[in-house]
Amino acid sequence: MEVRPVYASEPTGVIAVLVDPGGKRTMATQRGASTGLRAEDLREEWFQDVRLIHVPAYSLFVEPIASAARAAIELVRREGGVLSIDLSSAAGLKEYGGARMAGELSRLRPDLLFATQPEAEALGVPMEDLERLAKVPIIKLGAAGCSVFGDVVPAPRTKGIDPTGAGDAFAASFCVSYLNGAPHINAARKAVEMASHAAAKVGARPK
Image (cartoon, rainbow, N blue to C red; front, side):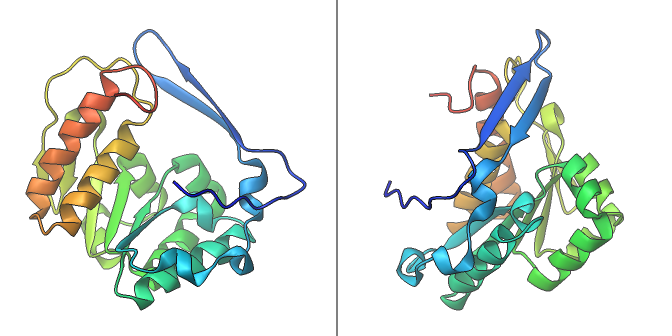
């Protein structure tokens, strides 16, 4: 991985993750300097040959990072790349405004849209209408699996220990399968397997 630091007055961001004995997770986030990324900090050559860009919705909540995210999306799509968006946080969506984010999604028209049920509800858009906002909307159902176009894909029966990183593992797996041409059901099956594997181990980056 090549690191390109952008210096700012704010400190490095920090996330505190609390997991109770039952596996329920709470996250406290301080985004720090990350929100200061500007469109002019980006370099076009970074995005050459990028086939997919995955954007958490909170990157669109505040400036200047929102303009940087939109610029990155434009650079990837200019070369025919795919856009994936994860709604990320129901609380953040409510603060930003569900209707406002729904309008943003309508303009961006992502190829893939990942959301939990609370996040989808925060948009104020009926589940059946999510297809208006994305080519393939994926609803994450936690330990129950996921739903794509109304088709529910159950997760393997495993004991959840730490859900930290499970959503990221799910999205990464689905995106890779999608890029390789897998039908959405096959991509969903692989994704729930990867998420279940992550949730069965401690830490955000289980081996």
